[in-house]
Length: 258
Image 1 (cartoon, rainbow, N blue to C red):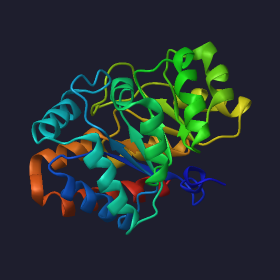
Image 2 (cartoon, rainbow, N blue to C red; image 1 turned 90 degrees about the vertical axis):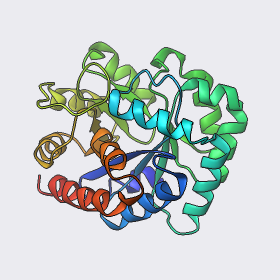
Image 3 (cartoon, rainbow, N blue to C red; image 1 turned 135 degrees about the horizontal axis):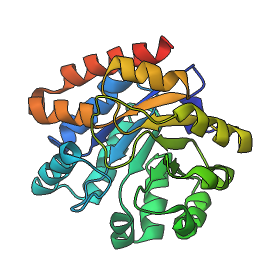
């Protein structure tokens, strides 16, 4: 069992997302450790990018704040090295193909593996184009996480067959962000995946409240939350750690209550 699968071994998983460097890399480092103590099972670390096409206004603003603060990929790698002296929680990077290309795909993935990352999510890389990353990820023992959307339908089994780590089920069309209601039939998406491969499925995009997390986790293996956490970072700045920790604790309890 790899570390990503371990995240799903103790019941339903809660997976928070952070934009690295918002409000600062020192605070991001503290947040990772605080979120682990609060019950997070796996953490997504967003590497900021100037044109984050999958993101809504909350995470876009966080990307801009982090980039304005001068955050670089190398600084983020150094931060992960520090985190790994304190924590072994499973972690995956979420970023865009350009960030990986501009660093050098092989160099990026080799370094990510060496510093202790477990996987990578590239929301702007369609399934048909994943091969150029997939082989290098496998070479270094990283999971390239597949995403499926409500529109994937007949492609879901194809995507599931090649999936590694866990499958990221996108709950709604459009960009990330909090939604008052999620109407997608997640249960049927998850069933299609599981018919093809026995792999954990976690749901993200639009989950903000404990009730939504509970509902999404009831028909999947876990809930992913980004914008609601990033909003707290934006609201409280350097003082955000206790607020985020309390929120994660509440959300983890919600997914366990399913």
